[in-house]
Length: 315
Image 1 (spheres, one colour):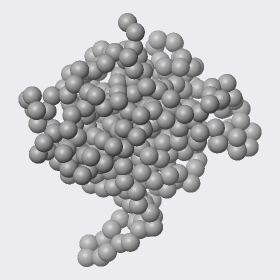
Image 2: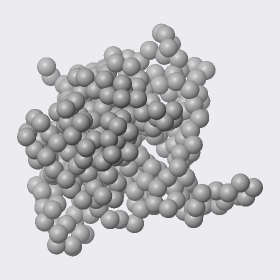
Image 3: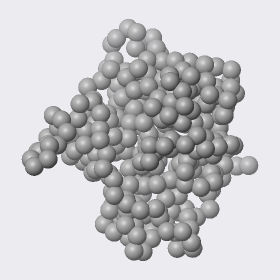
Image 4: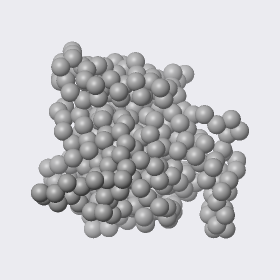
């Protein structure tokens, strides 16, 4: 089968409004001014923008409201080269909005919205043939072709039902963070969670923030753990999505597992130095600048593979 696109994505899209430069959490009865602010498409859009900036042909199936937020997100994604033909603009439905408050090296999210309506009015288009698909667990049966990479969001119920993992059937990869992985697998360590997830999908990945990332790839027989990159973080909003998208790109390129993890770590680390989630994704130009400027001998050794993969003409 010939693929129409490199990656097909489906999931929830949000309009993200990000505030940075806070010294701490806002206090009741006070007004807090921040030093930075940005907005952009969030949620599944973080993946789409990152992949496009890495030169992959992407197609997105998501619901957009017919409000100003939805129009802005639609126009922004079109300008990033994302195919929106499977997406739909829904009359009378409001685009979900997330406010992200970045402080103390992390972020807190406040979200308003509702699930897209069921029925013909909310029906998304058929997915194109793709080399890989990124799907959001909890939104129904996985739609897509090629290697299916599973993502999930925060569980507001805090139940972290293990039944969610049943939706991994047929998926190639699962990429939760350590807290999510331990919660869903009912384990006490990221290592134990990874071992359980490796029984469910060929490529199991657990991200551990500043402590790096670990993974097992049954298709290649590889396992790897790589450290995180220390950077001056401004806004971590969407960094996990940038990591996941970069891992998909590196997997499609057929790189060794450790290099895939390092590349995804780097892409995510560069994104937190900007503001705005998806729109802070570095792309090849940002990665090339980092590689040109980095002088640390250990990083030069660990990332020497970049010399062979950075394209001469960067998108």
